[in-house]
Length: 286
Length: 285
Image (cartoon, rainbow over all chains, first blue to last red; front, side):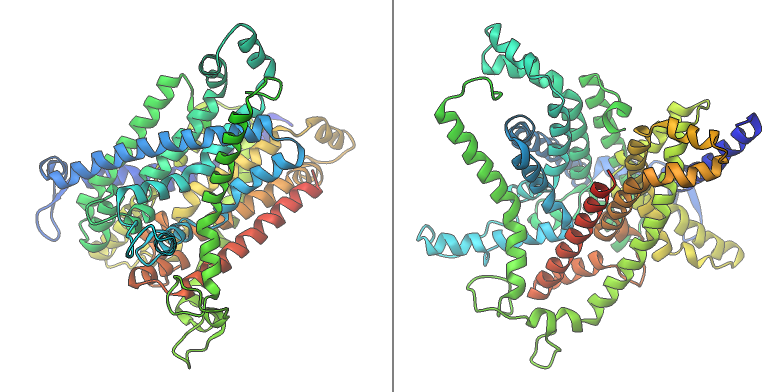
């Protein structure tokens, strides 16, 4: 291929990429940032200002929900990792042949249903007229209907359920490539289960752990259906507030500011996660 | 805790119990949802009143309207299908172009552009929707107010939904296709060129067939992700409501077994699509 043909193909391929990234990602986000600093003075005049951000810090409802959403997302991510690790370990290292493929596939099955369907399933199980309540009564362990929906525990159960796949898959992938001699060597050198886990297995699985945690955290932080449908009156979620500003109040400026704050929080935590674990986005995602 | 390290019987039993509990946890919500699509009662809960197909077939005469006679849900299903079709076409095309761009060409700033390509994965879906709404819908508002020009494509509606979903689905399609292109033996292409094929012919007769399984995989994934998406979609949707949004609105009014019927239909549809994509990639692997 000569140089000019090479240039031509580069530009032919670069153009769609740039159109996509610039028109759908960069420009809209910059505009959202700009709008978040605009204050509406009357129906058609705008001024620059920090009013939306001041609202966030002065109205405790906003920042309390913000902190709550962040903390609960971190907790959910950690819990998902704890639950998924033994499963991934079993699939990657203990199961053989057919069982291995089948178990892996079984982890994927729930994700052929959308988040809405999964949440709906949990609602049927947990609510007052739900299955768990009926079973408890049938067993004689409860006298009347038991409400298990509309609280934080229910929200976490649902969120962990939504995140599991995205934790199990990267963990299985990295654990699959591990050399068992390393683990044996760890035991031969007198390491206990815990020491081997901490000194050999976890460092090896780090790229998988980080990638799983980032995806699960992002999904959890940005989820809407599960916390809104399964949470109670007091369990607000930050995405819910963004929806309210845009859809019910038509206050785009405030909504944009809340959106920017959510984006800053998620980027900050992803960046911290990468820094603390010494990984790069390219290695973890690409 | 590998096969060659001895474990206690007690530990094995506990591990097995944990595995069983985990898969029950995975299967339970979906199983229940599916089963209650056939319960002969107006509310999806126990007790079991017998098997019925009313929630699919009833025509409204007996006070029950099944899914196949529910015009709102059927038209929402059609809207979602149209959206998913366009999202798939655009994302897979972009994915192919991007895969070649990043796997085959060398240019300045490649590393940086690759990071930009990954960016939509670390932005919450809600924000992707919000930013596109603010920019495009805001632009339509300004154009109408300042110059009296109506840019209806940029008002909330199908076009914006497709744009919003393509934003992140194109990244996923790129990753799937690029992963396969990376494993391609370039000597095959060189052989075609040596035998007198032009680069374009070589691409269509050698490289593209090799990529086909990943293209099918990416297409199936794009279609499913588009069909199931809620967070980005809900911000951008107009009067023609897609299925997830219609279901959400229905669910807020209260649950009926018709919702279970839709849910089961979606699960079966996704399962078929996934099996087809898996079968395809296995045939040609």
